[in-house]
Image: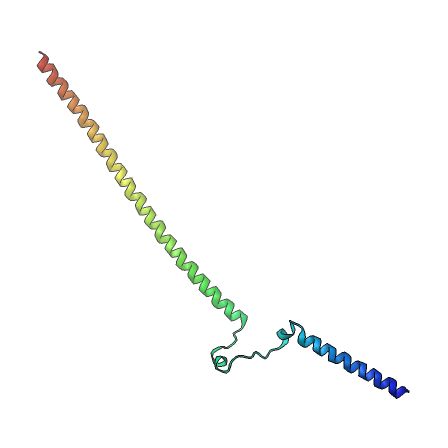
Length: 122
């Protein structure tokens, strides 16, 4: 009788282990524990897993490179904008100078016409 009890206990423990193994195999995260990555035969030579730190360092370098290029472009545009502002300031000063000159000419012509009108009235 004890042998039957032992056999039934052994059978239960075997069934329990089998069920646990099946549960682990069917579990969606069970594949993450496996380190064997199966790739087609030709792609194994093309793909070599790289450490995460190396990939992150390369991405960091690429991002820094892009940011550097972007900053360089912004500096160029800022310099161009500054040169446009200087050019517009120069044009504005020249326009004011011309405006003042034309005002002086107009006053001068008014005075001449006044002299001519006075002369003709006499």
